[in-house]
Length: 166
Image 1 (cartoon, helix red, strand yellow):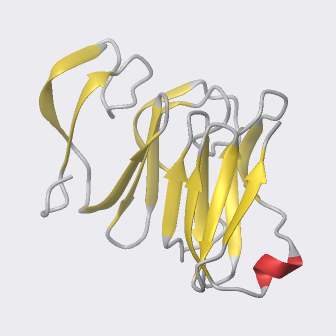
Image 2 (cartoon, rainbow, N blue to C red):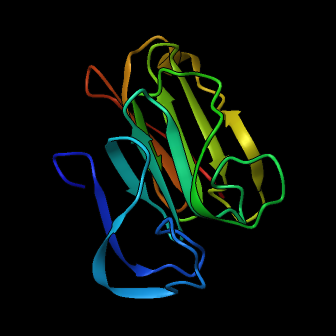
């Protein structure tokens, strides 16, 4: 990502995770600009999906949706251009991608949303709120990170909370 809000990419585009048709360029060994309508503020990548945040707060995604990681309600297997994820809130201030999941932090409303899976048995199509323990609800969440089988949340006082998928 450049300071002007452009994004560039290379590598596998098998599922359209570079925001281009997978038949056009299944794999790119040269860095190329990815066309986005808007200035990109943040970009995160999963195993085969990409999520970005643009000016105005919209969250867009492309690539594989085989585990529901793009947040689309329907059984769309892949998206080859950036499409908006319809989130329950416009105040997402942090997000992260795991291999087969995406998580979104709304610290204004003290809520974390997830789509996709962090375990082999659960597959979420559509964006769902994550149940938060009471001790976390009473703190200000500042960051969220998603791994292959876990979600970590950092609070303003430096505490870290985790949710595991088994």
